[in-house]
Image (cartoon, rainbow, N blue to C red):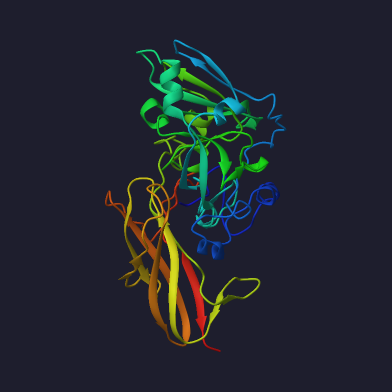
Length: 358
């Protein structure tokens, strides 16, 4: 590209607006990958607008639209239903955005916008069945309590799903066995296994069954794979395969470059995909020139990341280590990042610089 497209910047600088976003949101510290289930304070966080102040005693979840029997449920009524709990990984669709060139201007994620929690709540399918969608119903719309302006459009945060995908959803009121923290959607959020994080609508207050496709901002405008000329492209949906490594050794404060003593070391990390189960993870200690198979840990859940390990005899010198994942659908992480105007779904291998020895 000869010139940076509108909405991007060339070079490494960060804008004041991006810094403000980065101060509100946070990534997973890579060393926290050691936890199979991410502690709530370490799980990545992205808040589109403001955290709403919700009174749980007055809260209602409304289910309506193209249904035979509209419903209105309190939090206690949702808790009285069968409790379903599952470890589920999700990742921000913009993860890796800040590594693109030219860089899309938005929340400046590097590679750590991910986490795995045990989400618990009520399965969505029985509620939809009770409400009785019409025979012409094609989508389900999820509306949140947070409100703001995006792309010049005042809006409540809303995302829709095809009915078949919506039926996989969980109406979560717990995270890791405790009530949802305010920043993670208290008192109720949607969790959809396999999808990027924008679909896991926080502060959920209304579910609307639709007979026509939803054309609101978050579906029709925001989360799409735009080309450099501004064409909207395909929608962002399920997570592409990705693997991250627990950084070996200790960091240099400013650069985060790793320092490591020579000798045997076991590299560890986690891999995930929303398009299939993780089947292979490979590790390179020479910057991606060659790869060798890692050992996979047993799965912790059908929709959660999978641990891996690789034994390395670290020799003195500078090294660049990285890992790449392949899922059961045959998708493998690329070595170079796929570029799009908003910086979505960048699943290129993450590279870690390591200095071994003095």
